[in-house]
Image 1 (tube, rainbow, N blue to C red):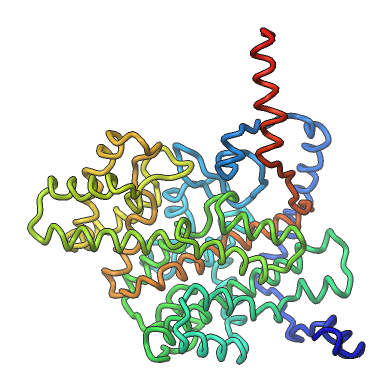
Image 2 (cartoon, rainbow, N blue to C red; image 1 turned 180 degrees about the vertical axis):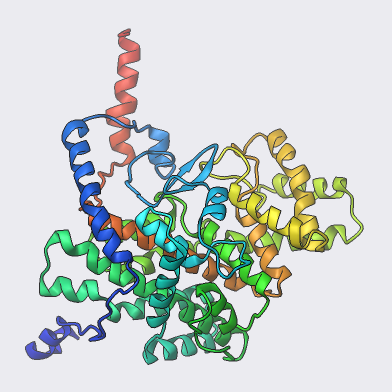
Length: 472
């Protein structure tokens, strides 16, 4: 077909048209980051100049074959994951941020999503006024184009999985990219972060409407709640849009978004977005790529697997069960060659603090919920069984063990939608990471790959020759 294209038509295809809508950040966040970035750039430059040849890690054959597990090879500014402490956002624990970040209203208990965005982007605890200014900025950018609305409608009507709808919808928003438009026009590399910032704020602002329409069209016959109310915060507006008015559910969703916002740069969704962004793909395309990874059953779909498995246990043991019956179900799962969903972690070696924060919330507000009690009882027996089993390095529960149960308690039963909520939250961390990638001038990611023959020749055979020659 390409041979039939006339040159003039072909040239038209090479000139994508981007939205003429231009946003101007009035929250003060970009201005503050403009003050912070020069000192961070200077710090990185000094580190590279003085210590650039220092070794920070080594690579083993096992790491090459097991997905670079634990290999220190990525710079990711928003968060770091410690095996004992869990996730630290800009050096702060979840419990610390629950205390320090501004809340919504006079009696709010969980941090506003806006305050978390400000913090992840800048590394500074915002004031209540700064969080509210970002709230207004996000509200002003919340609408999505008609073609994205129609796309979601058609995909949901065709029975497409909610995560696939999210991927397609965010990809369609790429026409709104100011980064892509400015890059074509020509910009200095030091200014790339500015346009990345604009796209990042715009994407985060539009996520509630995208995700709400996916939910409404897929599960509620297209019925949507009211449009964004400037007097409500980011989370409450989203909850009203999908039809939920319980303020305690609002509080849980603020907690949910905080604990799912980021998980350092090595997980599939963050790393994929980082790699794609390193080629100067704009934030919309980079995030889309990351969501393709989040849709995998070993990453974001894990919360669905937890619900399926716990429901299976519930069906077997009934309501009047004993801990011995639960133990039998856990052993049955392990002996069949499967894993216990919601347990284990690639890095953590203790109970995931994200699990603990949800457990504390449930114990405070609905300790007698049957599904929560079952999950809590599973927690009482499973770690010891996994230790006996001996094939799990971390026998403790992770964030996925609880999140679906919490959503179900408040009536959000459509568990095929849960990963969309995960992606909705993860936009905060991924967008922050992309901004700092561009601000610090990180290079395109291009590691060297080898094959098994290379490993045999350069490592295995060399080791064998050394051993047989008697060289110490």
